Length: 110
Length: 112
Image (cartoon, rainbow over all chains, first blue to last red; front, side):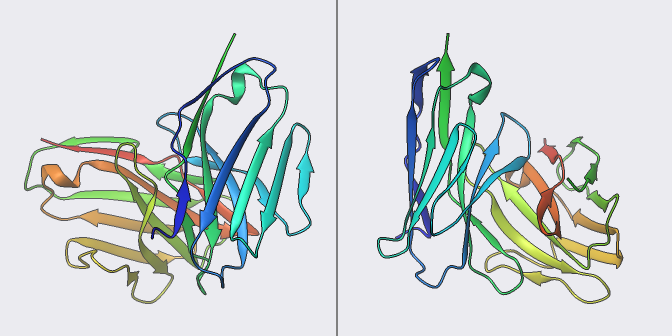
C-alpha cells in the first residue's frame, strides 16, 4: 500500500461547482497533514494545513479522520483559477520530511 | 511567505556531464534543506535531507555518489548530478523550513 493515496482525476467541473478530493495515508503515526497546490510545471505551494477538528479558509474546507486515516478537501464555488493539481501531504518524519501523494488534477471550465 | 530560490531554472546537457543546482533561502536561515525529484505525472519524492555543516542523509535508492549534496552555509545548499544520464531528466525541487516548508521554483533538467 502506498504511503499517501489520492484519486488522480482529472476532475473536470464547471465554474461554481463544489468539488471534493479524498486522500488516505498508511502510517497511523503520521503527525501533520496538509494540502498543497501545484500549478503546471511549478513548485508546490501550501494551500492549508489540516486539523483534527476540521478547518475552513474561505471556499476551502479540510477535514481529517484519524481513525480512518482519511483526509479531504472541499472546494466550494469553484473558480477558473482553482485549476491545478492538489497534493495531499503527510508529515511523518523526525526531520520535517513530507510525504506527497501523486496529486489530484482539477480543471474548472467556464 | 519565506523565499527560496533555485538556479538554474532550466538545464539541458549532454549525457555524461555534471550539473550543479543551487538552492538558496533568501530571507531566512535554513539549517535543513530538502531535495526532491518529480518525474512527469508522479508525486514529489524526497531524495535527501541536507544539513548545514554535516553530511546529507539520503533516501533509500538514491545514490549518494551520484547526487552530491553540499550545505556549506545556512542559506545555500547545492545538488550536483554527476555524470548525468537521460534517466536523470526530471524536475528537481529544494525546500527549506521556516514554520513550514517553503519550496524553491524548481530546476528542470533534460539530459540528452
